[in-house]
Length: 187
Image 1 (cartoon, rainbow, N blue to C red):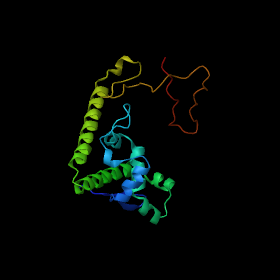
Image 2: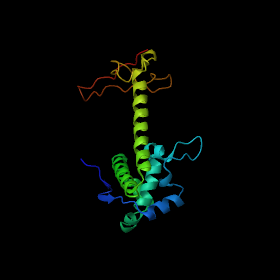
Image 3: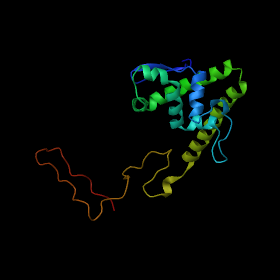
Image 4: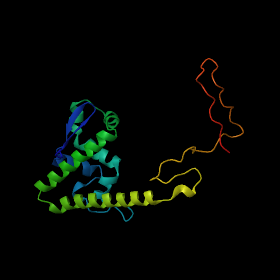
């Protein structure tokens, strides 16, 4: 499937076409898309990295870029946020990246195009590294835990057993001959 600047959410298709108006609204909101490689402070990553890791930032950008369409649809900011579930936000993010890259290409800004691509590669590498580290952890040393790569242990329980103040376990239903009492907790 070819990447597109459109996505589906809230029962309709949305199209992101970055304009000078979008850039001005975003800049007034403190988001300068022409400064993707700059760090706002020593503690914060560049905007290009935040675009890959901060869904609230992406939502804010989408809200500004779709302002006219949302107004025409009679949707409030709350309505917009409600329709942006995980699948919709993921698709919207892809559409935003297509629109952003197209905009930079038309502006003859290969530096910004490369910044977006480099941030994507760096976040993908960091995510992959973290996943490998987590999968390599040996959690079998922790009682009741298994390592992420191994299946749960048979008979393992998700937490501590009942406390002294816990209510007694339910009795089997005498009217249902197939019912059994629940298994007794293991010490």
